[in-house]
Image 1 (spheres, rainbow, N blue to C red):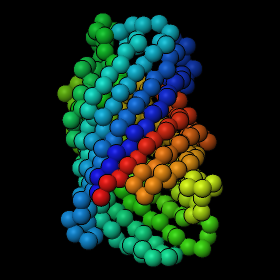
Image 2: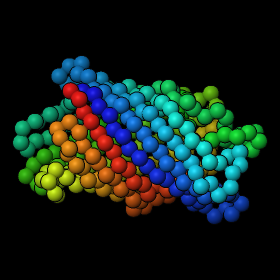
Image 3: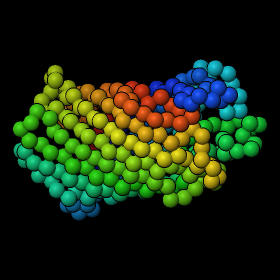
Image 4: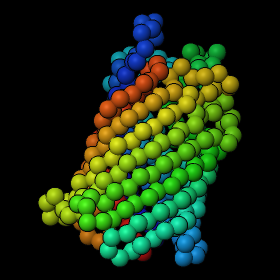
Length: 270
């Protein structure tokens, strides 16, 4: 199986600490991403997965420009992810359960950071705090469990753990991320071919490091609510509108607002 998903997000940097000496650099960031993905059956129970993103990233309406922040954009390939997905339990007909476990490795194929944005020379060299890739290798472990019954919603729970294996040439070592998500998908459409989908996400992000030092704008705990409307165009494609809103969060320094909106188009070809 192969396919793609196109999504758009808008973010706004927000200052979260009380240090008035730090500059919050008001502005907005748009991210347009196309994810090409594939799934190939090695056996009846084991699949090879691949995901390759193409990104357009733009920062604009910056309050004032300097070496750290300015109106700019980047376009290009992101980091390639290769993985294995194992079907542990798959009851296909009527009420039943599905259980999957997976593991993946993300490789540094996207353009990464040119310099350490927190280094001693960062104030004198134009650079960015965002990049198309991370420049290092990470691994991800995950699991999903879904239950379909006579209850109006298909219920599910999924977990993810992502951690770095290497440091980038610029000294970037991203923090470990652990997440747990509860899912509820309505079995019958709200309106013809439109299905509501609700998620509650718990996520912990440990601080990033640059050249061994903790980055001042990293490390967080989130509880988010995500609502989706899935419009099934046909058996091969769908449109998905997503709104994510933080129910509770603890953030450090200046970070991106976790309130986000996305419109995705997903196409599957067998």
